Length: 458
Image (tube, rainbow, N blue to C red):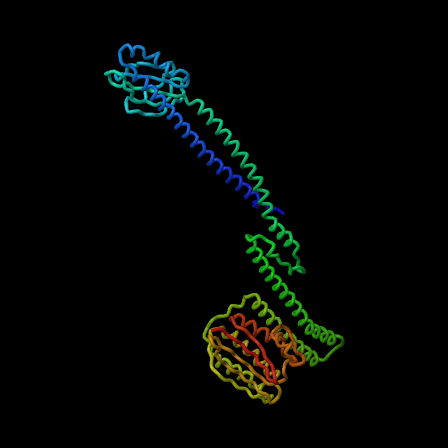
């Protein structure tokens, strides 16, 4: 499909090829024409120089006044057959001693040393003239010999040459344009193939990639960039699909509970206390829905790199102790021993880091058995950076579940059961916060001890 206002690359390359060949041929023709004209000038000068020597030889045989009177037949005999040559001989006082019938060209110079140039005859013809002195065979000053040759034949040749040159340039430009069009069409064929394949992309076919090995080197970078873009689109579309599926699945149960409970309550008259109990129960479900929606919005922003943490100095030991005070009552109810060790400070968003640590502590408190233990260890890693390790006792999590613990709504039922308070998004939010800070989150579990480790860069 051709877009309005779009310029064809094939047409532009065709015009470029035609213009380039036309300019090159035109410059080449001008250079050749100049060389031809120069060659003609050298030939004319050489011929006139030879005729000047011949005239000097004839004039050197003039020894007496009688010989001077018989100069005309001597010169005509010497130059017989030179119909394109005009000859004029002048004395030092300007008297014309001899002049051929067509010697009507203007005087070139009075310098007897010899000079050559171009002049125009009275009838408009362009002549090449050579003048030089010639001594006589008698005791008189040298005379001035002026020779001229007509350039009409040369001019006819150059006119034909220029006409042929322009015709050749035009034809060559046309042929080169056709060849350029064919080359451009063939060279852009891989690009058209990519365009054709990309036009068939759909939401179900986002796994298609441009075969980089089959495209020209000039398009390889474009193909790689397109493949990377398609990979990002595929990941984003998959996240969006998973996000929508998870959200619909997670909201379906509380909404169904709310609908069922409301329908049952409205099925027959109830007392005011019963209505209050129903509304209170509904309010709890609404709060849970509100938390779930808020967490999902947070994750959506984090996965699209819209969460930009504010950088400020954060004392992690102080933040952990504050969070332990908050969860202290829950730990006391289950006789859980809580401890913190180490000291570390980082530059990060205080509220986001507090939420990440709080999610791990809340998770540990829920899944630590009675009389268990929770410990938080702050430490530095070689090369810079800080780790926050939250360790708790309890059931060992199977290895197959560990890589998925930070996924949205993931449930390792055999190891950890989500109670009514959790929405299944705490660990996913924790990982998103760490990624926003350039860090990472990981989990380990063995021998009844589970560790969640947060790594923050220096």
